Length: 248
Image (cartoon, rainbow, N blue to C red; front, side, top):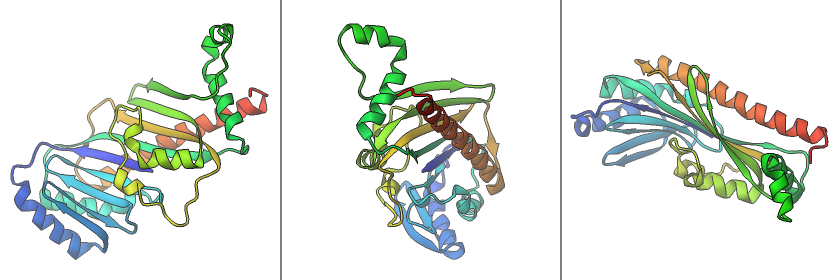
């Protein structure tokens, strides 16, 4: 599940142009669904949970549980930039959430293992109080020369995962959340793993990134998708390697 938001200075003539934008969508796309709610307009293509939503101050790309690539929205992005002709379009942030199945189906053991590893720095104090870690999740701020990143992760079971995905406002991340409406739509082919490692990742570029075309947008989306995938794979590798060393 991914979401990418772009911003621009408020368009004073937005109310007039949004009707033109919906006409452009109808002429150039095969919409699965559309939205016209005053200040917000949008369209879904290929799947109800692959969407672009537009406001007076920017647009957001969302892909839900169906897992379709945001790049599939490139034609719709063309329409937004052509019809609304916004100035100074910049990347705001990118958010991704997902789960990797774990080999062991014992949820209680998995979450206790995760909690114990997360609590290592306070292990002595916890033990001295006669307590044992049984559950937990991590929230970490990361930085590089180019990026600011927040990552939240932990062990979840299937019902807990679906509840969390359908209520993204529960996230502890500071950035924009995923589209709750899109996440309510569970594709019939999608099944949550019995026990998995869930991660929610928010990314923002430190330097202002301007875009002027759909190609610019999809290039940025592809780069940030690769970044979040790399982080999620590293989290899974670290957790499973700890298991293989007996760190349970």
